[in-house]
Structures are given as C-alpha cells and as structure tokens.
Length: 357
Image 1: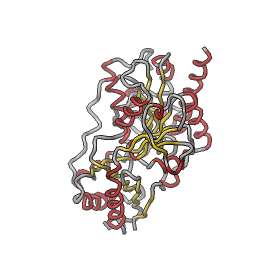
Image 2: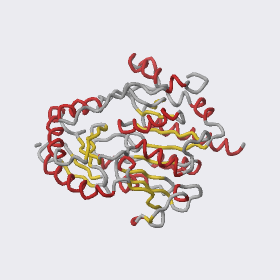
Image 3: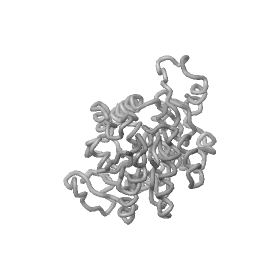
Image 4: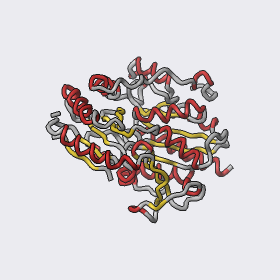
C-alpha cells in the first residue's frame, strides 16, 4: 500500500479524419531538469479550476466553448464513437484520481462513490477494463475493491489482473501470485523492480527535505514517489521544486514528471501509461488489430502518454476529463467524474444491446 508523510523547509457523423487524428504540437516538452523549469511545469500542469454550468451552454466562457469544439463532448459524440467500434472488441482504460473519484485536498480521501463502483464493475463484466494510475496497485485496489479489473499502478510499472478470467492477460502471460490477494489477482508485470530500494531511500530523504513546508506531502507509490503540493501556498512552490531538485541531483537514474499539483519521481526507464496500454493490448492478443476499440479516459498530464499512443495508432480514442481548457492528445472530452459515470453507463448499455443482436 502507498504511504504518506506530511510536509512539516525546504459532433460530426463520421469518425475523426486522419488529419484530425494527427498528433498536435502539444503538450509542451518537459522543461530542463532544474528548479525553475520544474516550477514552470508545476504552474502549467495545475490550472485554476473553473466551475462549468453543464446545463446552460450559454453560460460557458467563450474560450471554453471554443475548446469544446476542438475536443467535443464524448457524451454528444457517443453515437459516433460506438459506430466506429461496431463489431470490434472494446477495451476500457481508466485513470483513477479526477476520473473515477473527485480531486480532493487529501489524497487519502479520494474515495469513489458506491454508484461509480457499480458502474465500473458492470463495465468490467462486458469488456476488459483496466485502471492505470500513478498510485500503487495496492492503494488503488483499496479504493476500488473490484477483483474483475486489471490494475496498472505506479504509472503502469506494476500490473496485476484478475485470476482465471477467460481471455484475460493471465491466459497469455507467465504470472506469479500476488501475495496480498492470491485468490483474486496475479502479478503480470513489474517494469522497475530493481528500483524499489532506491525509491524507498528517496522517499525517506524527501520526507526530511520538505519538513516545514506547510501542506506538502510525500507519497510512496512503490515504483515512484509523489510530492503533493495541492495544499501548499503557491509562493512556496519554488521551495518544493528546489527541495525535490536537491534530492534528485544524487539520483541520475530517477527523473521528474508532473501531474495535477503533484511532482512524480520515477525511474529513468522507457515506461509510462502509454506503454502500459500497449502492454495490456498485446497481452490480450489485440495489439495491431483492426478489430479493437481502445478507449482511455483520464484527466492528468501523465495520461497524455496513453492519449498519444491511441492517436498515433489511430486505433481508439482518448477522452480528457477537464472543466478548464488545456491542450491534449485526446480526441474527446468530459467535464468531470459525474460525466465519466454517465458515459460508462451508456457504454455498458450499448454493449448489452450489442450482445443481444
């Protein structure tokens, strides 16, 4: 399970055309690995939230209205999406924080509703469903509590799946039992096992380093360390960036990425959420298939790697969850977790109707 430490100084009728699916020139490339660059990325990846009045489009900010033309609502485009996936094997990939649960001040309080849990369970009964999160597998499982799913924790570096499910990843991969849940799930893949002692060491150093920064938290997600600054006064963000930089100088095999008000310390390996999507599709025997519709729903900057994979492969759709305009590799958008739940309900209903035909 992940552990924490409080900081206590440092609407067209046809599918998108090839031109529409072309990779955009954003999001911006990561800044150089120094505190000033990190501070800039911290601001870019943490836009100020704006409440959107879904029931009254006329109340939308003009900039947001223009943005939704570029990234149409997946609810409004639902018929187009399912028409594209007719007769295909649909595979669903979901982020957790901000997608299945609301973004909250305290990471431990990011609880998904029972209603959302039931919707996700129903989805998993009709199509392969995976949660890909920056949190550890154990932490996400503790929130979700569904054994029907695949879990890719630590940005896809730790993947587990349901045991004995026909057509599951475990049918195609050599796996070992997961100690905590041997009767329910199996380990499938761990991309960075050798880094675990280093991650534990950095976790301890960062706890000491940020001690005294009011509101800062450090989370150990097994294969990565998350430095949360959601509750840190913005004037102290440079201190958070500098403290993280000071620690990472001694660890060239670790790198930094950015999420929504969180800095992610990760191993320098060619692995991310996009690689996890490719791995799971390959393990399910669906890689390079014209008969598959992958759908990835996420809200975070780290989800862009997965959006990019789907866009480049022209194989499925990325759906960005956001109530504020931001550039993305996604094709469609949803406003918040409540819209995600409505979209999943419609997806399940479509699969049920398709099965009856």
